[in-house]
Length: 80
Image: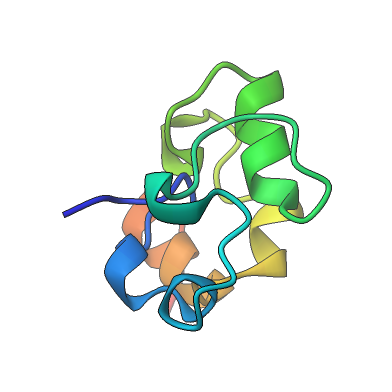
């Protein structure tokens, strides 16, 4: 199973399901991508996945596709 740079499984990504992924069958990888702020940010920070970045979660993470509260939870920064 391929996992996009955002952490979501490519097979369930809305763009991939609709056949509109800008990366085709390759799925999302860190690279300059004007359609995906998360991919560009990870590329600029040399991270394979955005959650590997020490600043995760950040303002860029809020653009989705994963809920920001969930990002806070998996980062250990969530406060109930």
